[in-house]
Length: 190
View 1 (cartoon, rainbow, N blue to C red):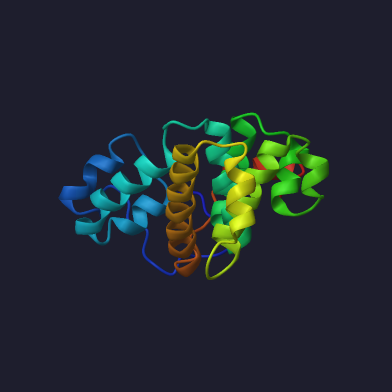
View 2 (tube, rainbow, N blue to C red):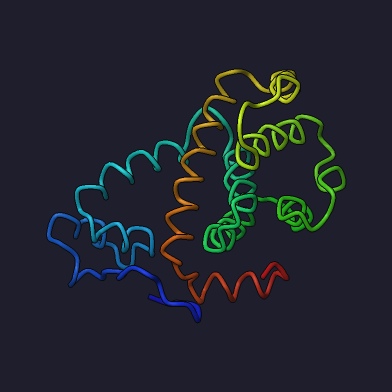
């Protein structure tokens, strides 16, 4: 596995070290540090990946909306691994570098996101991932003006799953791959 200068706090298993019940996740090669870490606890690997896959995968909202939620949540939670990984994914799904800089907090959201609907969604994400306690009614009302309730429910689950992964990756200090680091450097997003 290509790693940055940090070493993971947890052993990252490879196909030869993985318990036999987890080897299916290694069948196509390196599954990445999240799977490699979770493979140390085989009874959690399948359920965790099923939940995360459903929460972060295709649903009723666009891939763009999901990526806004994942990247912004990761920034608010300060997860280095997830910020790097999802900055690359954000590029892949068509977010502009200005939009990514906005989600990173490098430029004003109003400058990066001219659409009121996307700013309302980011306000909802910020309230979920960046605050504690009850979500203010005005944030919900603003989001509901532009997004159907089912979309906000789905994106709320996406934020929650992302927060789970953020804590896992941060707590275990999962490494960013050399490929992702090189790509972000090339794009001026490292």
